Length: 255
Image (cartoon, rainbow, N blue to C red; front, side):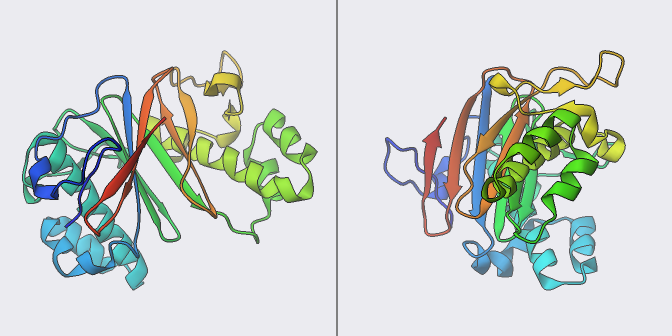
């Protein structure tokens, strides 16, 4: 089973961590893992899915998509069970009017996956996370022109060719994290806000535009070949990143 370890403590058995302290109103907990790392949970992970979730899993055409969904639900429910001292199979997830999953355990969460990576964020406040595998074939200039603010697009075009792709994903993951944190679906144009600022504060395009409050974005280190970000209403959050493993350990880093 998975285990969790603070940097200053020894590894502990996963089952002994029931009642793990929830992130408080100023904290972000980011958990990162890979489908490869958790590949051997497929035989029992679906046990944590309710009937509707199992039906949704079976509706995926490709096995990788199905495994991603099942693994994501397994990780979310297992960690929510840890935080709330609840058996994971008793954790129930619901959806709001915009389709954003939530639970009734006084903790906010959000999930993202790309390529082989899966990332889940937890907080006492609203949170959005996004991880993206860097794809060299993506037309960053075309997408940037269509979806970035004028200022962001100008910054992108000023980058050297070898820097453009990385810079593009820095912007893209932050924008996606903001959209997911607000949770209003596709109703917020990506062009309508600016995410490359000192301190990470999100700026909206004009005072008269739709303003969804104060948000801040931070980069998250997700490993070689990936970019990731988290969005939060906390101006100066305490962020802790956990690398979740299936070999009995999860090492942590504080940021």
